[in-house]
Image (cartoon, rainbow, N blue to C red; front, side):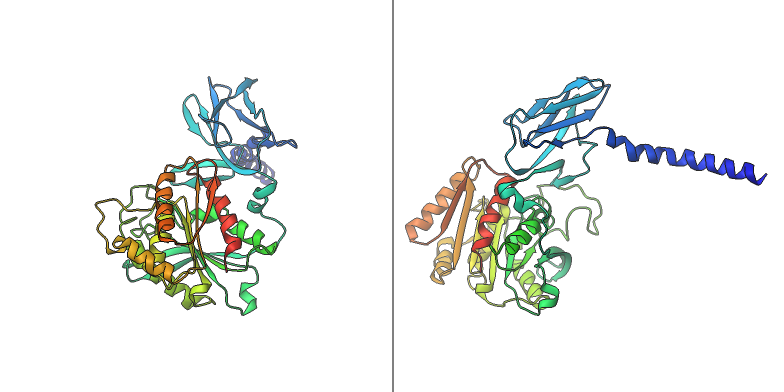
Amino acid sequence: MMKRIFLLSALVLTALLAPAQQALWEGAQVISPEIHANRTVTFRLHAPKAVKVQVAGDFLPEPGYADLVEREGVWEYTTPQPLEPELYSYNFVVDGLKINDPANVHQIRDVRSVTNVFLIDGGRADLYRVNDVPHGSVSKVWYDSPTAGMKRRMTVYTPAGYEDSGKRYPVFYLLHGMGGDENAWSELGRATQILDNLIAQGKAKPMIVVMTNGNISQEAAPGETSAGYVVPTFQLPQTMEGSFEMAFPDVVKYVENHYRTLKNKHGRAIAGLSMGGFHAMHISKQYPDLFDYVGLFSAAILPDRQVASAVYQDLETKLKVQFAKRPALYWIAIGRTDFLYQANCDYRKLLDEKGYPYEYYESGEGHIWKNWRIYLTEFVPKLF
């Protein structure tokens, strides 16, 4: 009797585990993406009932789609040319429906888009890798913002050895773009890997990096707040109307009260991409004694005409005060096809007319994370 009960239990357990085992081993049948030694990449999808399968990705020329060819239920595409070293993103499109690659668990979210990613090693892209170097720590930190009227979250990177060194460190405040949040730079921008690698190579000084949430109406990233699993969106209130700039001293106060920092202008830097570049520009001129290093990455420059915040008034007067205090670095970068390119040209013309010194870095392509990672690798070695 006991033998029959044991056998029955074993059969039930096998039946229960079968779906889990199938899920565990199913993905191993197809390798995708497969990165070859010559830097070409093969994408595969097991979809025997599909009629048409495409891959969409930022490694492809416009319009950014390529057709896969089917053989015995497996669809396949290999890039005709080697890919340059870079972090790339992609999806599949199956009969018009965009899906993620079930064989690739590595995904990132950019606002509402979730894509698979892969990395081609070499050159600058080696800064995006987790290499065998000393690693810093990354914390998700909640702080009180009386100006915003709520507790808010930010991501804080401390360099390798911070916990035991007893030293004080400079602080770099790094801001995201519209639709992003405090996770954007550490996930999409590879900021922690870039900092680890540059510091280990002796190309950057050890520093604390504070990555804020620039959406002042949010506590934190969508799905990680008391609001629950809200849908990420570009259309958030109070993003570029002065509230974030006015509340920014709350961030600096918390950081300097809770971390070992250099509490002076020369020990602080601020930079951001797109909306974050807009914020960095206006925060740095609003508080001209706070930051000695300023970086504008593909920055928006002026607010909408209907915005009436005092933060954006008297632009030229505030710039005059800021540059009279001789910031150590004012750095502007943008891609040649960026939709904000002309706005940046007009802003540089204003700076030139006033004789205000700045450094300029121009890249190819447009308003994309590829450029912002490049700008971060160029800007960080210039700090402190």
